[in-house]
Length: 357
Image 1 (cartoon, rainbow, N blue to C red):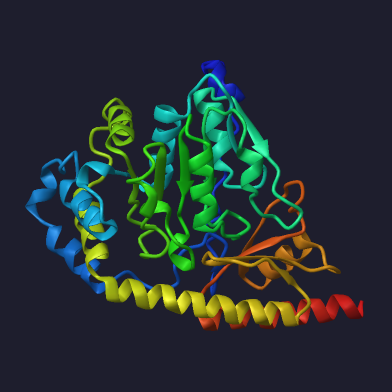
Image 2 (cartoon, one colour):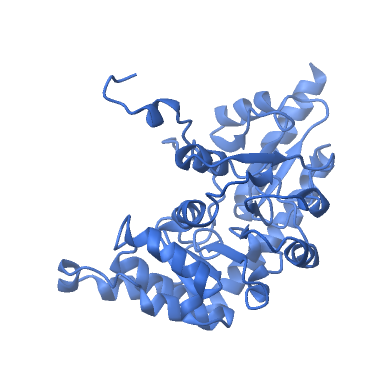
């Protein structure tokens, strides 16, 4: 450890993002990126912004993007917050809304950035175990807390919590903020955005990285009652006045304006997810029900880490988590049909080969 580090830095356990390997002929199914390119309208908007205006700071409030998001979700622009990817939006929400006297609650198997934020901002937290079938059970959260946060669909399991269950939680948990992290909601779920006008303690966070193919542009946003949004704006204004650059703003606006491309892309991924799930099940894998652009699977007779390593030797990258309860699972991003066929062919050989051995 460097002697100039602060005590905070010495004790931090940073988030570890998915690997971005430099391999030839790579089938990359480890970071839940969209396998299809962004809308042509996005690319045209970005090209149109490339010019002398780049010498000027962007709009610190990204008003055009807020208005586009508000139109899409049927809320007011003052109910929208935007940031540099949903991770930054989440980080501001943890600081602005979840640093309370009571511990916050989130699932024991979930997005691994949550405990990182708790460590960074000194936020007390308690994890709530998923059921044996890896589901969130709303009843487990109906106890005193400083806030509740969870992804829907959950990550890395992909399991979806019905909107009715979220409404029940909001109705019975009115003394603290509930944050629903919807990075994957467009792949088969119903967004809690429909509830923000009824529940002033609800914050919904989404991203353009997944369903709109803009992971490289870094655009995230939150929807909520204006008072919650103001809290996020106060943190943002104390941290970074210009979180979104000019290209991200115009690209984000164009992404929301091109509904046809968005619908085509997500439908293609959902179809491929079903086809991939059937193929994996035929190979003997247990496949958890998924409403995301990935599947979470394990094989009863083959070690998850060994399968991930063997796939890597074939230049196929999937995500393996060395964590309690899920160390035998692989999280597999839904790629193109061709990429998924390469994966299935490799797994067929591996499963058959290990069975013969």
